[in-house]
Structures are given as structure tokens and as C-alpha cells.
Image (cartoon, each protein chain N blue to C red):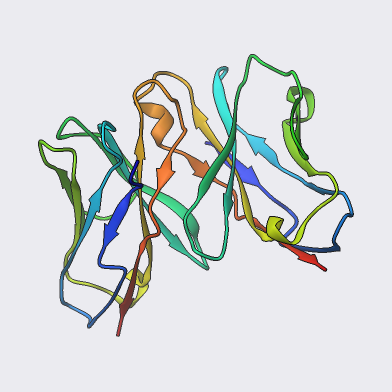
Length: 118
Length: 113
């Protein structure tokens, strides 16, 4: 069975601090996708990144970076120099990659509520 | 480009009633998925439709059903409502070939009394 664990329920940091959101996943599939989504107070989830299980390269996009380590089944997300606008609930997620039809059935973690204090 | 539109945004029903929620995907997106979000269970996949066919289904009872029309708009229906069905129901559409890159609507918040 597939499972995503986000052990950090809530994190609060002061603006400009760096913060890392942890994500650990379980799957028996050999090919799979990992994702991060952001849910601001408006409620609309926003896609941030997709990672294929074959691609363990870390990725950086502006202040965001992702560390994918297959050996530890982790896909952590770091925000550098956090800003108040980063305050949201962040979800790590997983889907099998047997075909495009399966990649819409996404297993979400329980989310980490991130609060950035000015 | 207009985003995913869900109606109604808020609704209140009583136990035993039924409800229909509507979702208009982004123009050109043929895949529509539905998710239920509750504080206790988190985000859970309900089903996915593509070209009017249900392509994938989550572990929900038969009271939860859906359909998709030829213009890709989708509806989901919950019959014989229970208190536990109170949730935020999120619809998402996906462009062709973009695995897992879902575009979500703001959701329909259902309260069952």
C-alpha cells in the first residue's frame, strides 16, 4: 500500500528563516511520482513540483528546493529566506506511474501547516 | 485562462438528503478528479473521469458517484447524506500528458446537519 507521512503538523518560523518540510513515503511500486502541493487559506491547492522515481536530482526553483533521496524514501522541501506569503499548508503526495491514468489518483500526506511570522 | 470552477461554494444539507456538486475544468482539460478533504482523514481521492468515462476510483461507498459530460464538465453526487460526509470537496482538472499536475478549484464546502 502507498503511504505518505508528514510528521510535522505545524511549523512556525520568523520571516527570512530557512525552513524544511519533511516527507517520507512508502510504496511497493518501482516507478512512481512524488509531488508537493501548497494550499493557501483560499483552499485551492497549487501544484509545486513533480518528481519521477528515476530522477533523484535535487531541484531548485528560486527560494524553493527539493531533496529526493530514494535510499531513505524521503522527499523534503526547503524554503530559503521564508516570507509571510509562504504561509500555507503544504502537502507531500505520491502516485503510481503505471500510466497517465493512474497519476490522477494521488495519495496525499496529512500536510504541514507553515506559519511565517513577520 | 479561467481556472477550475466549482459550484456551489457552500451548502448545508440534512442527513438523508442528497447533493450534487458541479465542476467546470480548465478549457482543454479532459481529465477531472474529485477529492474529499476532512480534518480527520485529510485529502482522499474519490474518482477520476476522462472523456466521460470513470478511469479510476477511490475507496468510497456507492453513495458517492460522479459523471462527466461531453464538454468535460463533471458532477459528483452524494446520496443519503451522513454527518461524516461534511467536508470540502475539491475538483481538479489535468492537461493531457501532465502526470499528477492537477489544477484544483476552490472547493465546495458541504455541511451535513
